[in-house]
Length: 609
Image 1: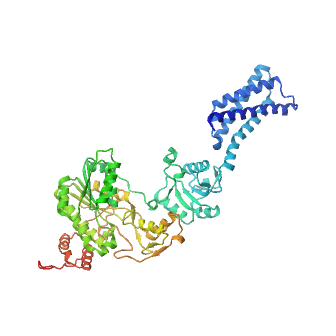
Image 2 (image 1 turned 180 degrees about the horizontal axis):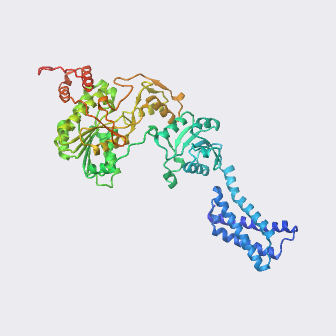
Image 3 (image 1 turned 45 degrees about the horizontal axis):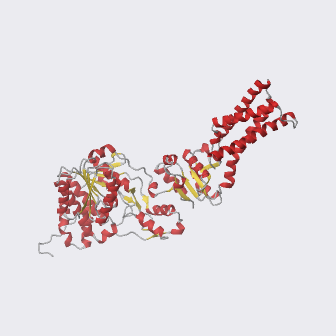
């Protein structure tokens, strides 16, 4: 219905109501069918004209009556009351008498019938037009402004497949009250019971101000039910119309870390990146590519994308060129092998970077157990080549990405990462370049993470394979890990190993259960299978050794560990002899050296094969 058609309809309806009300009032007051008299005709014309004028003045005909509330009823009250007052004034002027009883009854009838005519559309829409038979019964967690906004949109949006049937809120003052006709059932401890009692299909978490820890606690309650759990987009986006209730997103694993992300000191990072030349090794990897994205936000002069795999470097170069096409950043791809010392020296000499982020490494624990010589070549020799090239070419800051597996390592990968840390710390002692390392736990969504594996297993219908029911790990997101790397460069004084306060470790089996739940499946449908620890794996990961503990934070949520023993001579000797050792011997030497349990490395004559 067009706006003109709508106004015409309302004018016709109001005309019928006003005329019927005044003549019926005369019948009730006078007790006679002789209702057409001069005072009544004059009063009818005045009330009718006043009603039209006041309706346009108060925009009564522009109201969306399917969503009528107290505000709209107040407008009707003003229009009807003022039109009756005007009629009383005209009666006094024309016939020198005010018919109080007649006007009072007319006022009541007008108020009642005009109000009913408007509210009836809301009742008809709610009863007949908004079909609820095929909608999913929905529980809204949060009865604040965001929750009410969600409920309103779900009620008015006939295309939405969600029907709000109850609120959950920990504010006891709201309990047992109705909001928009929807009951506030109780606190978050009532979620499981409410899902059963109200036959809930969906749960929407509508509290944008939730901390990560609070969200995790609520989701754990939701996970006890069979209902699908979703979360509200940012409240600002909902208010501005950028997203609607049709854009509820699923709760993501990173929402459940129970720890707020580390924030950046933007000014300090800008000082050493903006208008500088920055080089990233392993730029095509999951961590390296995100480091490149984060760096680009600070407008470096040039960003050198160094990697061994041409396809991954090509992809990140294309992405950055597209994302930052309106900037003057120069993105330069370099295909190079860390093990090629001459090529690393050449790249550093050509580009003269101010800052180097060393993200390239072999990180897959079981694969490195079977190929320890490759871990030595890439993680140890490659790091040494990159560090020496940086030192010789006057790089100001060199940041190496390490791993929590470097602490008391039981794997080849962890041992080589610990030795890479030793190399970095030694380089800092004899160079003007500030060499630092950043150590963190598992990264959600990285290529070596369990998350992609679990998701593929769930898509195939399960089971999800977990190595051990007691295995725990620290987790962080890729963007958060990359921010920590950037912040470390800004905080670097030289020789430090930076560690993020990663909160409480997460049980891998709990992570698997949450992923199954987040996928919309039940644990019974997918199942979990325990496969046993893989070679080199530990049940528990650590971020600090006992002799490295330094309690003071140097930045919110960031710690620095003390320097432990550095065995550079032994590392160099291992590098010169590893190719002549059996794989089992390489592994033994790596673990012994990384754990400060030195075993003499056999000397080989120049004639040895």
